[in-house]
Image 1 (tube, rainbow over the protein chains, first blue to last red):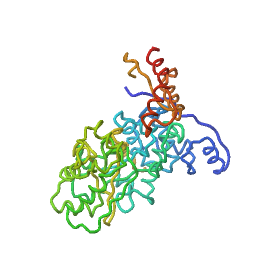
Image 2 (image 1 turned 30 degrees about the vertical axis):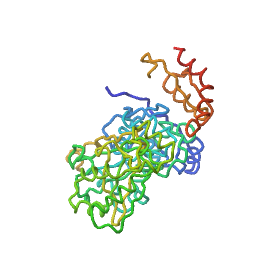
Image 3 (image 1 turned 60 degrees about the vertical axis):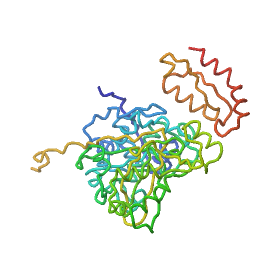
Image 4 (image 1 turned 30 degrees about the horizontal axis):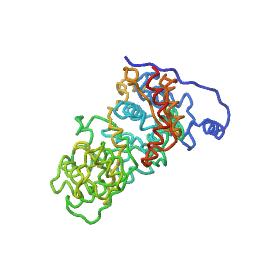
Length: 361
Length: 68
């Protein structure tokens, strides 16, 4: 049975925008940016974008163990500047983050700069205008930026992930402000992420990764699949990532041109993953003495001069998506090591009203 | 959670993260959870420091393991 949480508190406020924003800033109900006031009518418009009960608990969010009700999610989505049609993505995204496999307890509180990245697949991404092309991880598209921001506001305002108390990130990351992207399915030479997971192209699905901001991988010179893959492997097999420390489930976001070069040479997505499992490695001998000892004693690395340390336990642990516009750039997203797994939910928008109901008299 | 399954448990950490630990315990309804805390940090310290901190923690670890 679905849990039911409390109705959101409301209060009456009269004053200018500057005054209501100042109130939210004073109370710490923001990520630092100005907010859009979550008036009852604005919140109602979001609740109309879903069939779910406003008081349904979508997830319980640590460290506060705050109940993320549909209504509370809507309030934060309004505050973030979202449009109502984005709402189903945010609800499904929060559901994915509350999945025990995602391990939000640790993701929220850790010193690591992990941020929840939402990767959106399927028709809804195009319908709401999510950017999968040029600058998809960056600025410029309302859906990407405000959905990502809404997730962060929910993690702070409902989950209590407040810097310095519930969120102890040593340095943090700009990815913690907003981190949401659509996969560039049109330019993906392979099956998109959700189809690989068993859904159809017509399903809308969100996949959550607990990862760092994108680390760029530039290769303007390789014109073969093996050439590009060697550069990618070199970038991913690096010291200092949590994946080298403790494996996990990292993400590779290939730019469409790199993906095309790799696919043109006959590599399937599975073969890309196999190549990276074999070659995205770091030499044990180049690590410092304490780290070397850790790898030998805790991860059973062979103490030999030619030992290469993998960043995953097997090829399937690497996820591959295609994102971006033209250009010879890709990126990889190191994850929070063994401390989080990608989780996935179907995005269900409200069933459209029958044609007769929307016909005007 | 292990303690609730009958496994005596001691939660160790550093004073740097005491507020977070107490907050999480409170939010999970186990406000009286005993904590074995030592001076920060735990990572990146040398062996003599590990031994010194282990000695410091011993009484609170024993207390945590023996109090139901």
